[in-house]
Length: 186
Image 1: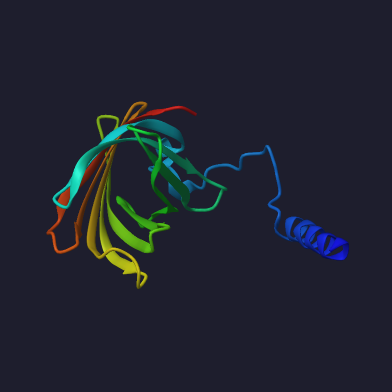
Image 2: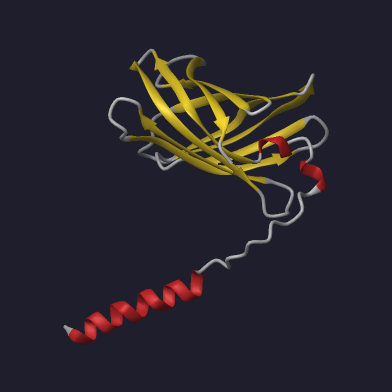
């Protein structure tokens, strides 16, 4: 038993050393291709509401984070929790990439077995940044809920971020599903 405990401890220690990410306080300069998307950088938090023909309406708190490491993409991390009882509702992570002048791509993975590849327009008008991204591909694991299309809108006006999401799923056509209003927290 004792040697088994040492082996487990050694394996954990090795795993930490082998796969640990370097910690640094230095933030690299923003890649020049990210100038249009740069205003999204930071942490965001706020509330939203959801509805869909197959579920009862619900409220949620959303935490969203856009970061960068100096390469030509933003990292994206999103989590939601129920307003009713604070239980986790949804999570996704991915990358937002510039795709030429006025264009962007979003690659997203969800723990529910759904992956998206979206692309669309990036516009700046009167200080308001607007992204409209539509799915090109929705990939599903064998146990994932059927989703055939997604459309996301992101509207940044100062330190307020508005998001909407429509989806075609479980036999329903492209239909509004989520809307949130987030404020910059960092």
